[in-house]
Image 1: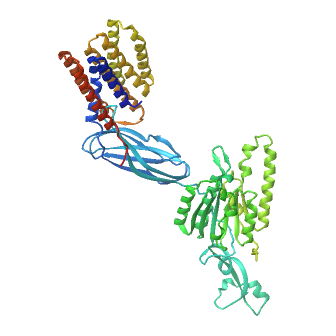
Image 2: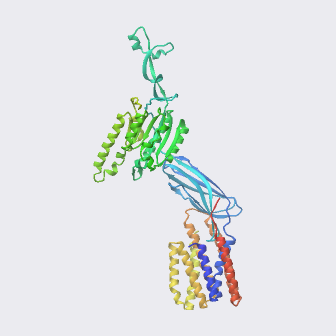
Image 3: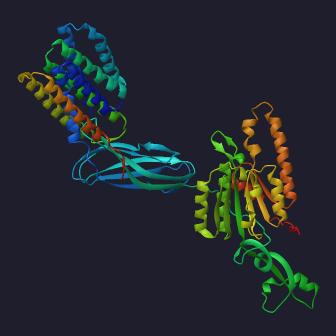
Length: 427
Length: 169
């Protein structure tokens, strides 16, 4: 029961029973409580005038890193005030030390600090308001006010350091990069031999060929290296997200996406991101550090979704991806996804599939169950069959056992460039 | 902060003594169950204070005082008992508030501000009780009407005041 109502009930019980029973003594018993309430009304909590600042440090962190939140509350009124402060931390943040609540009596012109430390998992967390309750000098009157004091913290996904990947596409952009462009020019890898032309560097003369043909000189040509447009497509479908205690397969998808985004942008490529799941979250292609920041923020906010229309890859908006682009699909893969990927390959896309292995991910749990090992063996064979179908169609597949660091798997799988056959476009 | 439980104890003991003496003198044994309940609530509040227990403690204390007023026990002591109850209740609420916070800035100042307010309440209440002993008014229908109107006016005033809403700064 609210304290004010309790006192009112007692007062009115005394008064009404006194009036009904003609007992003046009962009226007199109500007097202390009436005085208490009256003094509370007269000198009740006044409207507080506060200056509040919020500092969240650091604003960009990795998961699990402590984030310090400091609120400085200054009383700019002419009277001292007793206030309680209650800060609402974003949902998903865990308080490590300190307390987001404080009770304080603040003299005019002075300030108090509310400090606490939080940590959380990947995401964007906002601090919106601070609830200040002005308390009177009694137990009755409280005046609650909500102050908009905003703050934000980005908890970005871990970015595994990937040194270099050997990728190939059929078309490249004009800028110099690391992807072989299938055109002769300045580069490091041998491309072809042609007749010497005046102006060619003597260092590039192919002496062996020239010795065989004494009348002519031959020059080595090298393969030009350029940048290309790459689309990272992350599988955010709820059905692809296997969950174990304290671990989700989607987190590995995010981690691999972050690692690939950084490595590809570092090599100068134009990279875009699409999170395909309960919604389509686009990060349109771009270059450089700004693009990396955009992509990491997008990955920080990525959540799985369960929308019927996106339950398979059939509705992948392929029109948004130019034919010259390299598509990197990060997905545990379902059997139904294979024909769609084969169709995309047939339409001319160069595709790389990075697939966190769901069978090995679930191994520790299923191996303990009755019949689990047999089931795992069947699932493994089925997966191998699907991956082989993709590889036979010229789709490069990186099968990633998530217990192994992603960078090690990628570097081992993509150490040599794979020359894929030119796709035949359907007439 | 350290003195807060002691003060609560002191006010509660004052109220208990007055009411128990009243019951003994007036031989109002039928009030004993309520008194036992009241003492039980007080002891429980010492260990695990809860909002409902604090409210019940005040309510039952006032109930005993109200019933004792019919027995002819001196009203001054009953007003004193109710005042002591009220002070104890206020400080218990304050203690409950303090328990909600791990960190309190200026706790002694907050208690001092509370005590000064409670001092005013005590002085005014006792002054009214003393005044009531010296002034005698015949309680007829006219007084009932006046007190009733004042009570209704007070009720509407209080309700208007209670309608404090949260404001977005």
